[in-house]
Image (tube, rainbow, N blue to C red):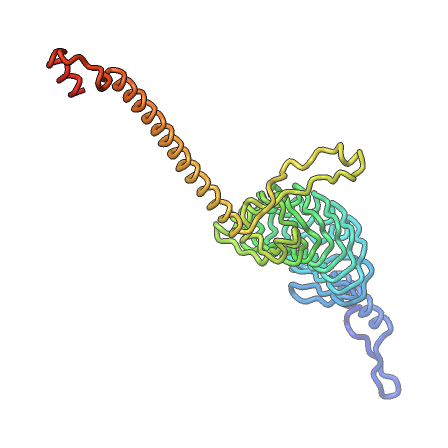
Length: 346
C-alpha cells in the first residue's frame, strides 16, 4: 500500500499550475535505474530480443556482462580488444554465437570459453593469434562453425579439435600454415567445408598424411578451397590435390652445416624428389626398352653360342670321316669290293 501511495501522483495546485512531488520524481528515477540494471544490457551496447551488439565501440576490454534474458549472440567485432581475462564470459552461458573478429587478440586463456557450452558459432577472424592452447575449445561440444582466418597461426596443436566432432564449417585461411597433422583433424567426422587457402604450404612428405585426409574428406562429400603449394619451386602454384603421392622429401642437411645440426636425426619422411609426369613416363619407357633389349641380347648370345657349338661338332665329325677314308691312289686293287663300296658310301 505504501508503494502504491508513493507511485500515486501527488499533485498540488500552486499559482494555477499543477506541480509533481519531488518524491515522485526521485522514485521514478530509482525505478528506471533498477529496471536498467535488471535488463543487463551494457551501456555501450545495443540490445534487442536476441543480440547484444557492441561492435565498433573502440572497447579495450569486454564490458561487464549480465545479459538480458533470451540473449543468444554477443557481437564484439571492430574494437580494440587485445587481452581477455579467463572469466570474461563467465556470465554468458546462454550464448550461441560469439563474434570477436577484427580485434587485436594475440593470446587467449585456455579457460576463456569454458562456460559457453551452448556456443554453436565462434568467430575469431582477423586478430593477431599465433598460438592456440590445445584446451581452448574444450567443452564446446555444440560448436558448428569456427572461423580462425586472417591470423598468424603456424600450427594446429593436437587435441585442439577433439571435442568438435559436430563441427561442419572451419576456416584456417590466410595464416602461416605450411603443414598440418592429420591426427589433429581426424575427430572432425561431420566437417563439410574447410578453408585452407592463403597459406604458405610446403608440399613435401610432411604434408603427405594430411593430403590423404583431404582426399578422404572429398570422398565423403566435403568441400575444400584451393590449397596451392608455395614450396618446392617446381610445384609452386600447384593445388595439392593434383600433386602425386610421391611428393619430395625434406632436404638433407648440407655438409657445411654445424656439427650439432649434422648430428641431428634426418627426417624419416625423406623420399625421392618429385618429377613431372612426362619425365616419369619417359623413365618407365627407357626401363622397359632396356629390359626388352637385354632379353634380345641374351637370346642372340645364346643363338651364337649354339651356332659355335654346332659348327665345332660338325668340324670334328668331318675330321673323323676324313680319317676313315682311304687315301686316293693308295688303295689295294685287289681289295675287297664290298669294303670299297662301304667306304664310298661313307
